Image (cartoon, rainbow, N blue to C red; front, top):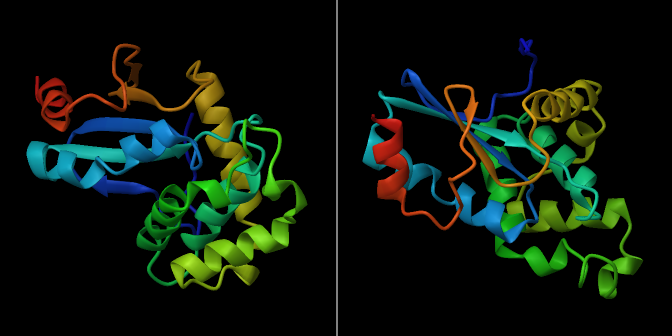
Length: 185
């Protein structure tokens, strides 16, 4: 599936020929663990040898998932692009309890509105997401991430692909060195 570029900055780091795609959901603790390994992976494998692409995998059991994924994509519209998106992913991971429900269905977040959720992200990230959150480009981009995952048979996060092939035996708790070895084969 071809991805048409827009004003949103691609969630891609490195510029090598090997493509490592991470399908992550921002409030998933395993996805957060995997996401935090991007920079160490690029350092170990080489930015000129590997390209890491983050694909956002919104999941309904993470009840704020859609709002948070939209916030990540909106952040990539702002000056600073993908580094803003990275910041949103980091703060959601660092403050996960403020962006997830207890047991996926209860707790104090039951009383939080989407507007309050975006305000939390803004407060932690230092980014003003309001106008970008409502930008017309964000909806199609969000849908593209969902379609791309489905077309590749991906339903849970984190899931990993190397050069377009799903790697079912890779996990977020694998060592970065193991990931680098697999990418450099």
